Image (cartoon, rainbow, N blue to C red):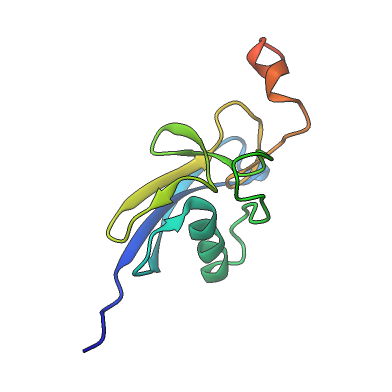
Amino acid sequence: MTEQASSMVARVFRFAPETAGMGHFEDFQVESTEPLSVMALLAKVHEIDPTFACRTSTCFKGICGSCLVRVNGKDVFGCMTLVLPGETVVVEPHSKFKRIRDVVVDFSQPLAVLERGGEQ
């Protein structure tokens, strides 16, 4: 008897500068019987739709910060946040940085500057 694959749903934010600040959410069903990090989930979404922009190269230790995203309304390290089979997660760009495209943000300004009230 083989174990039947479960799935998870990634509801991801889609944004492009040419949309004049407007964005929308798009749902992707990803098959997995194991928990996935948000970054691994986003990489699978990118495999399904190569036009989806996300960062997938990270340290996977919560140190470099290139995986910062907003998941279910909370800013988190995507490499350290797990999604379980059967779950639906909402993934948006990190709230402290300027959006570039989809869930990719501009990290050119250090977060400390933004937290002190610097421009986004």
